[in-house]
Amino acid sequence: MKLATVVIEGKEKAGVIEGELFYPLESVREQMEGIPTDLNTLIEHSSEWLSDLAKLDLTGMEGLAVESLQYTSPIKPNKNIFCIGKNYAAHAREFDGTPPENMIVFTKAPTTIIGHGQPIPLHEGVTNELDYEGELAVVIGKKGKAISRDEAEDYIFGYTILNDITARDLQARHQQFFLGKSLDGTCPIGPWIVTKDEAGDARDLEIETKVNGEVRQHARTSLFLFPIDEIIATLSKGMTLEPGDIIATGTPAGVGKGFKPPRYLKDGDVIEICVESIGTLVNKVQS
Image: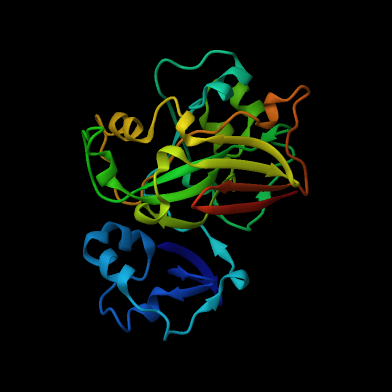
């Protein structure tokens, strides 16, 4: 099942995408009394609603054409977005040649979040080295702490796509990740969330990033240094994960900084990130 949040007449509306049509949860509620109408709440109470929602016959309902939609981020996380650094050996090598022995974890601020199709600010005067990072993102479905690797799958609601836009000069200057990763509008997410049953085996999905139609990144999630179950187990050792938490799993080799000379983003660049069985996230850089 695909779940998205879009803007209709100036208001954010969550809903289900089936085929080429979007069905607002407000309309679905006429057939499923009491179902939450925002995705954060739906995810929190997914054990009560998800199974019945998946079985619901939407053919008699009025839907909106997918291509006409104005997307925003599917959900707004309760905390900063969790991100895993250098989770592909080839990406680690294009920076300093050393894959990490231990998991690198950092966060992006909630104010970074934008949706599919929304412009990425160039942030002229703040950075000269804006870069792209295409990633598979995990959406947590239920609250948990000290989650074992064997249990991790039970805590996943679904998956989406995330572009971890990074100001490389800020990242280097301040010797930590947060400022370089947290400029406003530098975390496109979407276009939708795909529930884990429909996404298939996330341990081996193809991921590809294009800039202006040119393939820059291409890999499979089977190349993760730290697989998703280990990521969830590590994050939850001393910290509670909550429904709606988003975990970006790391980016493959081929980022702009990895080229010689570097190929940073510029005004008008279009970034497309495609993840097998999930979809394609598209955003344009705008000064």
